[in-house]
Image (cartoon, rainbow, N blue to C red; front, side):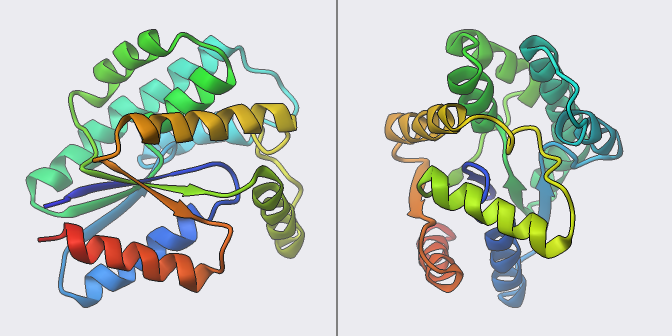
Length: 211
């Protein structure tokens, strides 16, 4: 049974929307779910998220960025994820270790093998059973984030959204490489389609996996 389910993908691929839809679907079936995210799944994580995502124009060194994410993950696993899994709940998590490899590894250029060792320390051996990679062309994802910011009347404060296109292309390629390396865990979903189409595909996969 897939008990720990993660959602990965670049900016604007619809992870938050699809996690909420899946939570509603599983809850309607009488299954206990915990929905969480990285960074920001704990009280400490919320403070770290402000630093990492909403710091504005201030630069963060790649190593600093990495260790802040790892600190968030260590606390998150210990306080939220591991206890929920022990209680036999389904955990739906917006980003996990694969985001570290894609963003800090493929995007920032930090050695992947070194990152994997750091991840091993931070996640305490907790591994996703199933990972949805929501994938779409970079221009579609960034257009969605721009549209969302305009709709909410807020400036684009996410440091990653302000990165150059080349960075986002590296991250997308990284996610696809990770998925190709672990086809039994990953399910790559075309997120360029409408929300309802993506939701339906995810439900069909979940119906096969939750046995």
